[in-house]
Figure 1 (spheres, rainbow, N blue to C red):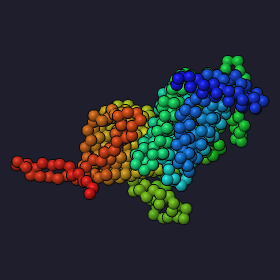
Figure 2: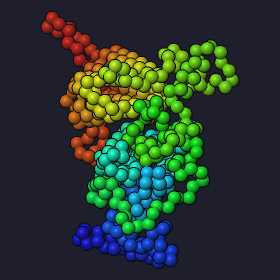
Figure 3: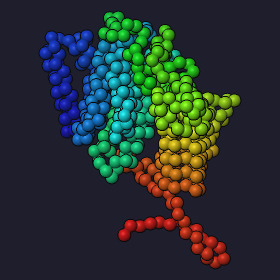
Figure 4: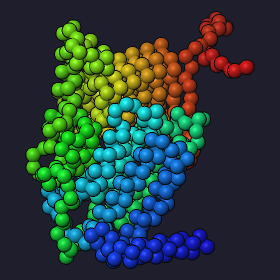
Length: 472
C-alpha cells in the first residue's frame, strides 16, 4: 500500500507539471516539456517535496530570519532544478560560458551569504548553517577529474561539514528551549544527507549529463559587463562565489563555490572590491600600534583590541611541517586542506574565527584564543587547548588524547570514533563535552566535566573524587 501511495503521488506530481506546461504555452523557462518529465527531474521534485518540504514546514513555525533564509534555500534548489532541465537540452559549454550558465544559482547563494553579514542576528547559527550548506549545490559544476573538484557524491558530503558545525550548535542551544529549531536543524541536514547525496548518487554520480545534440548555451541576462565574472562587480568578502588571489587561497576553502569558479574561469581573477584578509588585518595592526587614534580608526581598534599586542596575522606552512595560524580576528572561513599526518597545527591568539582542518594531522595546539571554533578531521597524537576563553572544538575522526589546560569555557564535540580517547583537564572551568546519540536521529548528549574535587585522607593516603552538585 505505501508503494501504491507513492506511485499515486508521483503521477499527481507529473499531472501538475503538465498542467503548468500547458498554462505557459508549452514551455517552462527555455526548455520543452520532455525535459521536465525526465526521471531525474521527477526525482529532484521528489527530493524538494520530501526533504526541502520538511525544512520549510519547520521554518514556518519559527518565522523571522529563519523563515527568510529558508526561502532563499528554496530558491537555490529551484534554481538548480531549472539548470538541470536546461542541461538536458544544452551542449556542454566551455569553461567561460559555464560560469555564466550557472549564474542564476550563484546569485541566490550570494543573497544567502549577505544575510550572515552585518549586525549579528540572534539566529546567526541558523543563517550560517543554511548559507554554508548551499555550497553543496556546486556539484553541478563538476566537469571531470581535471576540474579541481572532488566527485559529486563526495563533494556534497564534504560541503555539509562546515554547515554542520553551526547546525550542531543549534541542536545544543535549543535542545531544551524550542523543539522547532531542533526540527529545522535536523531537517536541513537530511536535505543534504541523505537527500541530495542520494539523488546525485542515483542520477549524476559522474556529474551532469549534457546533451550531445542540443543547443549551445546562451548567456543568462546579467548587468555585469563581462561574461567571465560569475559574481556581482563588488561581491561581499564571504561570498561563496568570490575569486581569491593566489596569496589568499591557502586561507580559503578550495573545495567550495569559490574554487569552482576559480577553475572554470580561465581569465583574470575577479578580485576588485574584495577585502584581502591578511593585508586588511595588517593595516589594522599598524594603526593600533601607533598609539594615535584617528576618528576613522576607532572602530577597528574596538573590534580587535588584541591585535596590537600579538602582532600581524599569519596563515602559513613553516618548513613543510608546521601550520601556523596566528592573530586571525573575525575570520569564519579559514581552511587547511592540504595536510598530512606528519604535520602539526599551531593556532595562537585568534579571536572570533573558525578554522577547519580537513585532513588528519599529527597534533593540534590551540593557544590563547577567544571565541574560536576549530573543526578537525582527526589527530595521530593529541589536540591541546591551552590558555583559552570560550572556544569550541569539534573532532570528526579519532583523537587518542585531548588536553585542556588553563581554559575558561570549552565546548568539545566528539565523533563516535573519538569516544575511546582520553580527556585531561587542569586549571579549567566550564568544560562541556557533547557526544552523538545512539541513533542517527537521537539528540546529542551533553556532559559537564567536573571542576571541583574533594580530597579525603583514607588509609594513609588522600583519595580524590569529583564534587557533584544537586539542586534542592
